[in-house]
Length: 304
Ligand code: DON
Image (cartoon, rainbow, N blue to C red; front, side):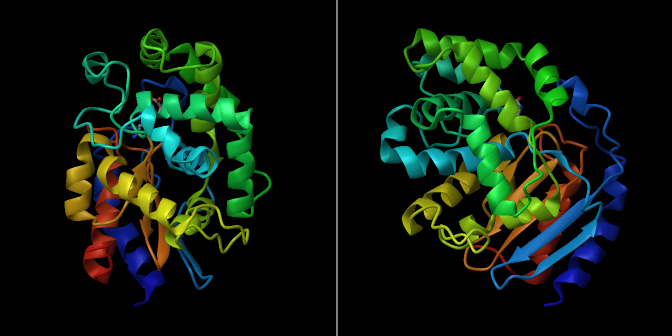
């Protein structure tokens, strides 16, 4: 398979979708991204890197950070995590409040916002400065020491973060947040604001494709079994109420973010990152989904 030719063709084919979607505007600092941008990168376990489009442009990884934060917490805290957060798809939007009350403040999974707030809370208790630890982890795994937070985006989200604050306060009232609510929110927003480009992101996902062993840092980040578990949760919950459609069309574990990025993992082979800021109604990048669908359909590569 000629991966470079394939992703160049895909970049051309998804162009009509770029005008059909708009960036997230509930975080005002994200709303100004030009929706005409598109980038895709593939990092393979044999050390090759392929890229097309605006692949040097860093974007806010937003909820993609949740996959890496979960990996860190699972590695440090182990299965005790699952006493405080579930691992079932929610079938609801990522920022939904409704399920949390009748399920006594235990979020359905670690990738909806409520679940990610619990994971952040555990990270704060176990690791300390959880957002800086995540930034350092991603610097190592992308071999890019200059990666950093976007404090403007973090502040913009904090200023408009009433829904996340509501989720956090409700969970605190149920006893499922142990640290100070403001502190948990600040670390969560900062982790979401991290800026990476698609090549950095594809490289950082390689440990998930390599059964937990990072070919970038040389560190065993997760056990083989934990890597399987993260990939499984990405497949079933990583794109929220669109996880069924992603499994059907893409057939890979994926984690999306409202910055327009999606990380996809093909265990044993490669990690793929796609970015285009325009979102569909469920908060996933429209052109990135189209691109991933074409990639797995044309290459015949997927977990199925
Ligand atoms: O908490 C939020 O709403 C954002 N920081 C992250 C949401 C997100 O990326 C959902 N992904 N598609």
